[in-house]
Image 1 (cartoon, chains in turn cyan, green):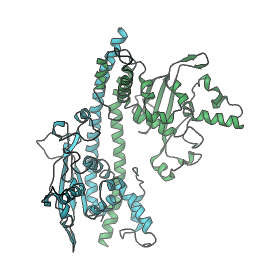
Image 2 (tube, rainbow over the protein chains, first blue to last red; image 1 turned 180 degrees about the vertical axis):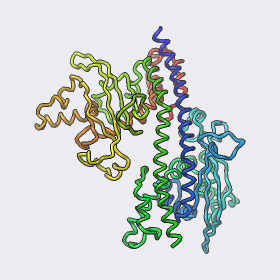
Image 3 (cartoon, helix red, strand yellow; image 1 turned 90 degrees about the horizontal axis):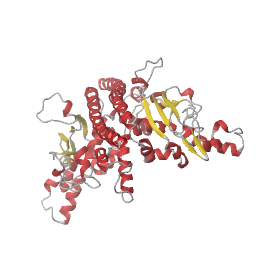
Image 4 (cartoon, each protein chain N blue to C red; image 1 turned 180 degrees about the horizontal axis):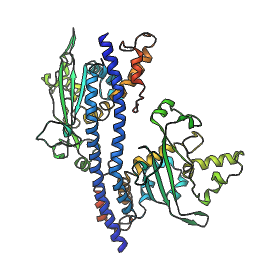
Amino acid sequence: MLEQSKLSNALKQLADIEDDMEKIDEQVELFRLKSTIPIFKKRNMLLQDIPGFWKIVLSEHSDFADFIQVSDFKYVDCIDKIEINWPIVSEHKSTEKHKVGDFDIVFHFKELKEDDDMFPEQTVTKKFRIEYDTSKLKKLPKDQDEDSLKEFGFLTSEKVDIEWPTNYSKINPDKIKDKTSAEGKKNYRAGMKSFFGWFRWTGLKPGKEFPHGDDLATLFSEDIYPHALKYYTTAHRDLDDESDEEDEKEGYHGYEDEDDETLSRKKPKYE
Amino acid sequence: MLEQSKLSNALKQLADIEDDMEKIDEQVELFRLKSTIPIFKKRNMLLQDIPGFWKIVLSEHSDFADFIQVSDFKYVDCIDKIEINWPIVSEHKSTEKHKVGDFDIVFHFKELKEDDDMFPEQTVTKKFRIEYDTSKLKKLPKDQDEDSLKEFGFLTSEKVDIEWPTNYSKINPDKIKDKTSAEGKKNYRAGMKSFFGWFRWTGLKPGKEFPHGDDLATLFSEDIYPHALKYYTTAHRDLDDESDEEDEKEGYHGYEDEDDETLSRKKPKYE
């Protein structure tokens, strides 16, 4: 019985250790954010001088392409600024109590003007927050266990206004009057699945929203945004290789290869 | 031309930012190590009171099984202590200059005594070091690019002495006298591919050593060791489910289910 109580005691203490480890994970994440955010800010300033930076990163990112329909890329190409803010390390005081996993993605779209399609310049901020209260969910997401959601939380967001391109008027949920007809339903669903549908994603109505909206948000916050330079360098080098024959004197964007190599000497870790 | 020089200047500064990011990654890793190592130490103390802890973790870990042959598991089951030390945060002063990616894995094996097989109690330390000098490589590993190895480094180790089980005498490279005969070669290769062969792995002779020895090392340092409690809890719960019918009164290791739940309430993040 002495061995028994020793074991039982050890198991109880190990449960505490798991709690400690989770706290440390959070502290490490906070340390990472505090260290990297100033660098991201400096980088974003410099990116203003690199034409087509985000267009190149997004159009060459294979995981991103899994979320985006081919017809959406015309508008994704209009994204010329992305900024992510983590409110937990923001300078601005907030009344809301923030968690390490909360973040806001700010997109700036430049204008698109074509004879048969118009898309206005706009800045849209989509905020993502960790939620633990599963009673807010209309239903449980597929393959998800309620206890895990309660313990580790799940990403949520609020529907945010974004102007859709005129070409998408037919599938813009706000413009579909009859949502009950077969045609109306089909168009509604097509709209919800488009990149613009993602801006309506709340994370509370699984099956009725942009699919895997949380994964796309996390792809931005954990991969595309922090590793954008590396993706740019790889994409850029690949594009250079392709265009070498046609365009031997100038690099992809019309600057000398020499400059290209200044950046290319860093091999991306995340290929 | 003004635009041109602005662009060229931005690209140069972005290369510096990539360097800064790499330094931050290292600082974050160092912060993580410094925060988690005291917890690991506390955990390892407690594990001494949990019989069969590492046996359960290792035998139920599917990625680990990819590296280990079925016949090796009899000896893997003898591992009753694992400790990883990261020399960069070690208290002991060292003359060697260490990197964040350097680590030592200490295994303790308990004795195995069978009529036809003997395996002695022993403690074996296998040290892994990041190397950047590719001239030390006998040849380049498959699918690896020399520039990447030079920049990001590669894991190396030194052959370390370990007593093999008597049952493995035939394939123990140190005991094979004729390594040129077909039989000798076959046995030599079988030995190099066994778990014991991994202790001879140097990382410098790709194709001639334990396959993917670096990946197995990293599996220990980045996954099995830090997340051992979560793997134990999952494995343990699964084993409990299986043995529920035969053994309804007692838990898997003869302690009450109540204690089991103390630990089980934490769901593993890394399933």
